[in-house]
Image 1 (cartoon, rainbow, N blue to C red):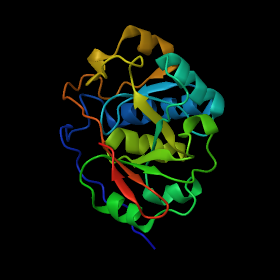
Image 2 (image 1 turned 45 degrees about the horizontal axis):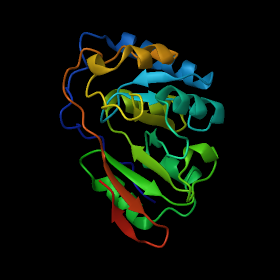
Image 3 (image 1 turned 30 degrees about the vertical axis):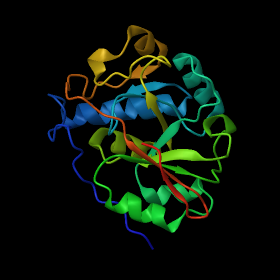
Amino acid sequence: MYGTPKMKPVSGLKSAIYGSKTQKEIAEDIQTAVETLRRGGLILYPTDTIWGIGCDATNEDAVKRVFALKQRSDSKALICLVDNANRLPRYIRNMPDVAWDLMEYTEKPLTLILDNAVNLPACLMAEDGSIGMRVTRENISNKLCFKFQKPIVSTSANISGEDSPQCFSEISPQIISGVDYVMKCRQNDTSKGTPSRIIKLKADGEVKIIR
């Protein structure tokens, strides 16, 4: 029906396996993060944009812990990452056709806000029932999402209202101590991440550029 988005290098990220980590160390890092997510824990992890606080997007208690850590109102929806666009129909009822094209051909991180979210906690969604979803093509976060097999929350690793950290070294000790596992991959990567573009797609085909 629709092809899997091709894996493309993400601008600004190193093409190597992020520092001196071996493939075994990376695999162990991802596995520990997955086990933490499955237990309802919070992780700190590198994404295709900036470092994020993550949890199992289908676990309401875990999502509420993210809001509490960020000291953020739960009336503000959170973004979720998946490894493959074909995973989205389980969580979005009646995906707009244009969404597939946008995810297939975009070359930069793109978050789509989509109507009619299902199988996700209400506290994760906007008041209108929409949800922000992004297919991550970055090496570590893509492998993490693939291994976990469910959407992973991705929200900037900062207290609400404070500046978003552009790399791991800028993340506050309060955030680091507030999660259950901090991924080791890419901690020494000093390249500056930037937020994704955001487009809102209504079920009726209306398109609105948010950022």
